[in-house]
Length: 356
Image: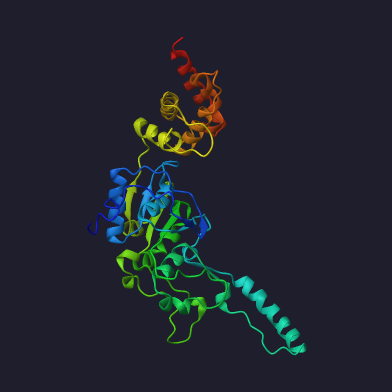
């Protein structure tokens, strides 16, 4: 194994039994994922260079799920997810500081202190700035990568998530960065490059840093794996793009779509509920789905819609043919009224070519 094939040289099997958490909550995401050679190569380069992997592609092609599958394949148990919004600021990726709650608590603290004194109590804990700081996503991942003693000055106050017993690597998914204001990406340049951040609100004393140690002190084996997704609805700044490794995920062709359905719904998929999708029914669905995506639809169906349609088709009554049941798939495959005509045209064409 070399610096640039850590991922592709790993066990190609996804660990479905891994106790993976998303923001500290157990998740089953990433159990089923199809890695192409291009995806493996891009992940290898991102890990080898220690740079974020910027993943572009149309909605529904598996961009977000990639991070979970990478974590499972590498045996990384902690994933931090950040959903970008139009109101997001770069600092939100590392931590949030609730100044309003601090102001309110400071006022209440005075009342509580007087009440405690009137009752003869001598011990009263005043709120600290750290009580109102919550570390998030990339901030959590950076803290996890350092020994606890190296970041202890940033953990003042109460309510912080507990650090792992030993420093560890985690995966960070920054989802749909193209939704954010342009300043969001520009304001991340130094932090993304250095894998470090400051918390000036702590107002630490001299000798107590208010920033995490430089990312250069994090061994390559513990450096967070950062996966950023984009639907390319807006152009990201050139300076940000230079700091990323890029991957464009192409939508799967018919053969790959059939393989994906087999992974989710085939006889060997180990379904907990529902019937497996027969190979003949799968091929009919893939053919109709492929034709549907050729239409000039406002919202083309993606992988999630295909799998939902497969579940519906697998549950068809035994006295019906798969072709006749295709019309029942409209709620799963069509999400806009304007696209119903395209769906009806594809189904009508399939019915016309069906052997009598």
